[in-house]
View 1 (cartoon, one colour):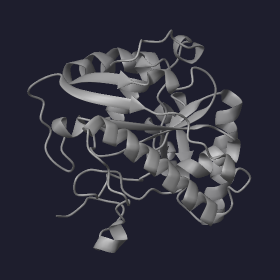
View 2 (view 1 turned 90 degrees about the vertical axis):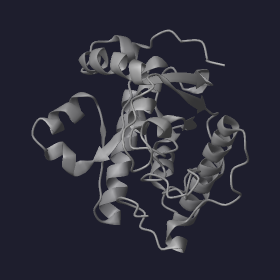
View 3 (view 1 turned 60 degrees about the vertical axis):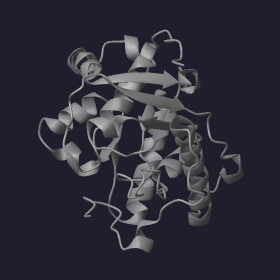
Length: 254
């Protein structure tokens, strides 16, 4: 069942660079996808949040962005810091409030994460972070082992982390496959979960053990949501690419 469409938030109604983009992208996506959202009321209407979706197709960001926009929030993603230095693109990323992520030393990354978290909390903005870091390597498209970035960001600023699962985008663009636009308006279901209780890890954002444990908890919640959408049980353990001789980033070679 699709959640009632909420009233637009101040974040969405105030003028921003999102509006001209949405005027183009939203109608186009409406032709390609029939996005059905469940649990949409669980996405905070105001204030900061970290949204953690599963990742099974290169087209997922468009699906998630459309869902978040329809729920009244501006869809902002984490983006590589280097992209902010690219002419025009960097301006667009800054204008839409995307959040830079550092891929340098652990100390630099930790500092950047803290700064990003403080900015989100101060401005009351949400950010979308794929905790898997790349498309899942799991053969049946279940969520694989997560990286700690999303949890680190949430814990650093006391920001709620919201799990999300979506299923159907792989019918439009299979993982590392070719785009399939016909038939139009393929059904994509999106399920938003309750905030993950990370209270046991508060004040432990610098502990790698705590971050891994908290991330495992988030991934279990995402897998549980996907299980509901697929109507079948998720694997008891998350897929670990290293155990199967796979790289965790880059294109998955068959």
